[in-house]
Structures are given as structure tokens and as C-alpha cells.
Image (cartoon, rainbow, N blue to C red; front, side):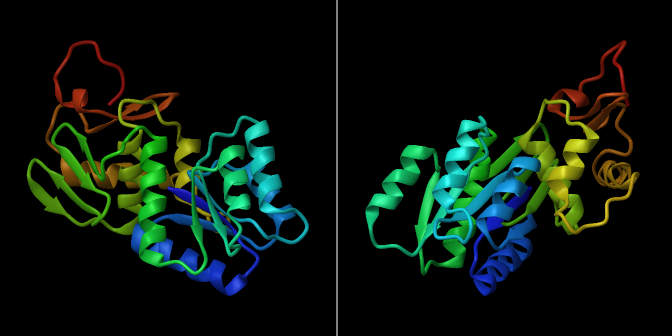
Length: 235
């Protein structure tokens, strides 16, 4: 999952980014002013935006208004140091999904971010289940046929994203956009490498893969992949 933080207090922004990378294995981009933040949110596909209200150049409420005017449904968590509830009410009316008042607890921030992303994908529970696969998004523990796995960060990030979109065809470009932040190096074959690693872990001997390849379209993670069928495309 990929998050954008738009926050002009650089130390706070970097601290939030560090916590989200370490505690939740998110890819995180940081913008320190409203003008740059608005450009980033309009040109990249994020799973969540953490948005301060008091920003230089362009304020947070204007960014939120522009997002919703462009029909961007990306969840938005507003951060505000203001005591006046008027700004919070305006933010909610403009389409923000949740808010936190500074100072806040980082653990609460992480929990709210995870909940907003799950709800955006129609997955309100912290436990994702796809056939014999379960993912605890709170602990990052993965179970397959009852056996526990703790995956390296990138494998976990890919599997969680696929599980959030279980049953959908997920394009390679979507995976690259949601797994890597702006500064990461993206190699052309990296998706195939991680898909292969997950297959080796979970279903090397099964006739139908947990994650199927639909050539020319993308990948599908689904429980149905374990039911043998004739004439199926992909592998």
C-alpha cells in the first residue's frame, strides 16, 4: 500500500513516514507544501492521503476540495493543530474520511490508516481471508493451510495488496504504483520475481496457483485458483 503525507512540519512528516514504513510496511511519499502535495496526489495513485490543513502555498482544505471535484475517491485522513472544530466540520463536509488533532499517538495514526485503507477496499476486518490464505494486517502474520509465515517486507506488501483486491485482475503497473514510493528504483521484472517467490512459498505443487497470471492482463489472487478446472487460461 502506498501513502502520501502532505505536512509542512518536516520532522513530523519524516517521523510519520518512518513509523508507517516500519509498523505497517507501507510505501510512503512525503510532500512539504500544498502546491507540491496537490500535484503529487493528482498525478499518482495512492491508497491513502494524510493531509495537514495549514500548509504553505495551498491549504489542505483546497487540496481536498480539488480531489473530490476530480472524483478522486482516495481516502483522506486530515491532521489539524487547530482547536476550532469549524475546520474539521468543513473537512468532513468536503469529503475527508477521518481526522486527528495534533499532538496524536502514532499507534492510533497507524491503526486509523489501516482501517481507512481496508474500508476503501471493502475489507472492514483486520483479518483478510482468501481460501486457505489468511493475513492478519495488525501483526503481518500470514497463514496458509494453517501454517504461519512471516514474510519479508516486499513479499508481504505485494500479498496484502493482492488480498485487498482478491478476485480482481491486478495489472503489473498497478502493483508497481502501490508497492513503491516515489524514490524507489523499479526494475521491469521485479513483480515477476516477487510473484514467483510467493508461489514457491505457498503452492509449488498445486495444479492451480494461488496467484494466477492472465497473460496480457495481469494477476489474480483468488480461492477459486485452487479448484481444478478445464480450459482455464493463465498459470
